[in-house]
Structure formats: C-alpha cells, structure tokens
Image (cartoon, rainbow, N blue to C red; front, top):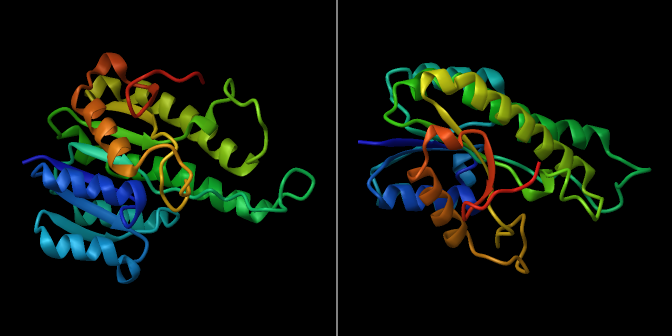
Length: 231
C-alpha cells in the first residue's frame, strides 16, 4: 500500500491532493495547522479511513521532528511539500516592506518545506520510487519576472527552488527524486476566482507527473502539465 504525506492539506491544492490520492487507494497522512478549523478535511477523513489527520505547523521545527519520530515505522512513497503563504500585502511594496511578514513567508515557504523533507527523508528512503514534490510557483522564476512586485512571495519561491535543486542532487544516490512544481494559476483562496484552472485539473496533472517520474527528471522545475519552466 502506497503512502503520501501532504502538508497544508486543509484547503485548496492540499485538500485536492488528499481527495485524489485517497480516491486512488493510497494511505494519506494529511497535515495542517489546525484540525479543529479544517472542516472540509475533517469531513473527508470521516468518509475515508485511508486519510489520517495530523496537526502540524511547518514553522515549528520541533513539531516536525516529533511527528517524524511518531511515524518512524511508516514508509512514505511521496511527500507533498504544499504548505505555503503569499505574504505580500497591499501597501507594503518596495519602499514600505514588512520585514516581519517577509521572515514569516520565508519560514513557511522555504524552511518549512526543507525541514519536512529532511525530517521525513529516512521514511522516504524506504519507499518504492520515492519522490519529494515541492509546490513552488512560476513567480519564483527570475528569468520569467517581467512585472516586478510580490517581493516576499517571489523571493521565497526562488529560494525554495534553489534549495530543492540542491536537495535533488544530494539525495539522488539514495534513489529519492525531487520535482519542483508550478501548479498553475489555480482557483483557490490564494489564486482567487479569476484564476485560469481549478484545483482538480492542477492536482491531477501533478499526480500524473509524479506517476511518470524517473530519476533522470529529478530537480526539474515544471508546470503541472510537465512542461519545463526557466529558473
């Protein structure tokens, strides 16, 4: 039985990953900051016993280590590092940056994702064809940035890309792969109602890329449909 661990599973893309993987018969370890307020996720878990819920704030590195120890006997085949925040707010662009918000964005989007990958690496090494899937964004592409703005979010995703590219090289000898995804502009709380695609389409595409994965593709920065993105 395959197992996937998903962070940020309470809504949007994370919730859809939970729904689709559980529907495929996988065991889903669904992590979110507050189970008590995760109504949709809780209802989904009540209807499908393959979903197990865990409270986890990816900014809390001690909590990540604690959960990794708790799950030490569990083999993980896919890790979805999905938890993330936008960070930027109206009125706080260059000239009036909110540096505390910037630190919080980096803590969540970069350090949180890397720490989860590091803590659960022993679990992944025992997987069949283990993959770390990091949810990044096209806004993390320096080459693609022609509009400026969103300094907090862009810098966090660019840093995530750099970290995950290095991790892909570091873990290759153990047979663990890394994919860095742009999920598309998705209709979620973050993406807004004017986004181009729905979460179901985005997640189905990313799952298909994970299914087709081989180590020759490790460290690639790709869209949900498999097309390559510039760094």
